[in-house]
Image (cartoon, rainbow, N blue to C red; front, side, top):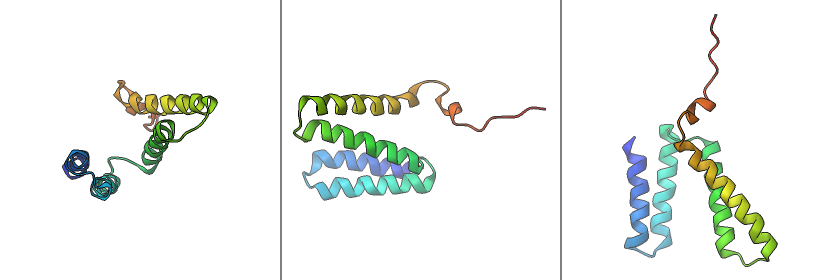
Length: 102
């Protein structure tokens, strides 16, 4: 279970070690693949993170008008706050299967 997190750490460290995009992006892809295989994250979680990353990238890198930036800012904040919801107690129980007692 520590292998995906180790690869993620290597990917983040790769940002400071080298400016080579291939180095840290390859480690990030390996980390996400291993996280899927180990069951740490599911496909819906990956899609959510990719959508948040795309919104953040678009907000800061794509030249657009003020209205587009406002919409992107709202989308970016909503998706990021959704990711931070994992820190709240009881979040995991929201998606747990209901227990039926007799």
